[in-house]
Image (cartoon, rainbow over the protein chains, first blue to last red):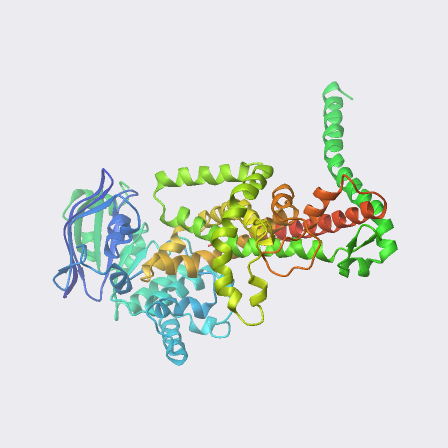
Amino acid sequence: MEDLLEVKNLSFFYGADQALKDVTLPIRKNSITSLIGPSGCGKTTLLRCFNRMHDLYPKNRYAGEILMAGRNILSDGVDVLKLRNAMGMVFQKPTPFPMSVFDNVAYGLRLKSVRNMSALREKVEKALRQAAVWDEVKDRLHRNAAGLSGGQQQRLVIARTLAVEPKVILFDESTSALDPISAKKIEELMAELKKEVTIVAVTHNMQQAARISDYTALMYLGSLVEFDETGVIFTKPKHKMTEDYVTGRFG
Amino acid sequence: MTSGQTKNLIFKIVAGMAAASVLAIVAAMAATLYVQSRPALTRFGFVNFLTSTSWNYGQEVFGAARPLFGTFASALLALIVAVPAALGIAVFLTEICPSKLRGVIAAALELLAAIPSIIYGMWGLFILAPALEKFVQPLVGETLGRLPLIGSFFQTKLAGGVNLFTASMILAIMIVPFISGIAREAMAQVPPMLKESSYALGATRWETVRRVVVPYVKTALAGGIVMAMGRALGETMAVAYVIGNRHAPLESIFSPYVTITSVMANEFNEAGGLQLSALFSLAFFLFAANFLALTLAKRLLGGKKWTI
């Protein structure tokens, strides 16, 4: 499969603290890559490099490269706003904005100056259908998004991300705050979405990584321990540490 | 009863009485204001007193319309200036400012809030009033004063800078720390994840503040504004210094005028009879207006929080 992104010798520093150490791995197009590892291993830090979320806070520094179509997205000349448009992100908890369901999904489109109401309506409906939440919200598009259940809110947030047609969606433990049924719906949705987008998902839940992902990367103390097809990671890993981690002997 | 139980009971009674005394004092004040304002209100009639613009010591005819209007007009004008400024400060402090500078500005704001109002009054009278007359009046007169219909309302009036506009600006300066404090506190409560969600869609800082942060805090903000308005309505010394306390038609925002508080501060000493009762009536209205503002603000500030 083709590589959409290539992480090359990536290091990351919060001030003087090095949180990522020389990480190299590919992100294959139209696949799901899980990032697993114990708390503090750097998996979320790595995820937040892809959309340069770290740029929001002072004293953060990248070293190394993340290549996308041959271009380093970490370099100074990159338009970060455009990059974030191409790299959607879904967080641990649902984060609906304090506005209506419709306005939530239209948010990113309006940022891109889509003003035409019929175009907005069409794209909002398409995104909500893609996120498998249209049937549940179609009668309440103009009511506040806070009224939806947690699982519906999370699918709304996915719809909001899909509306701007990203190439990649970054999931940061996006099912951890949901009940098992809602979490299962999100997992099914992710499997469906990889036909159109590439997914990178941080998860604490190893069963989930085994169930949904095509590739898995185990991280530990800021370094990549092992990257391979998920089947290989969970059945015949090359490293002893990986075997210990996936069998629950450490972590 | 054991001695422990007795102590507990005494403690409960003492604490209860202390709490009850607060209610008693508020009730007593309201009762005093009501009783003292009765003569004027019965003499002129409630509605007539509210709508009459006369304030004639010789003939003993008094009306509340001008002071009431002056009070609300100066508070409103102050809010028009103070709210955008305070919002700007709050956004700067929570979203833009480097953390070292933040402490300095926050301390300066606290200091500004702690200055006794009489000092604002003196500074307003000797520094701000002449400065506004010299630099701002001509500017406003040249621009807004040229407008049709409402232009006359912005005509320059040279009277040493003592006027409704100066009073409003003093009030604005006094309530800015207050509004920005509440706005800052509310903005600090916005979950970082919510803001990041906006950034993650390619939003700029400005778009995130305008479309996510401000809508998120708008109820608390409204509460802070109403509370600040309550303060502006009741502010006495600073306003009494710079408004001129002149019972005359308001020709321009640069005319000397009256507010409830300026009338009370200036006239209580020499007042007697119906005039005194009229002053008590004004005090009663102010009391009621402040009570309403505070109740509304509490309701807004304590309102249902948005959670994620």
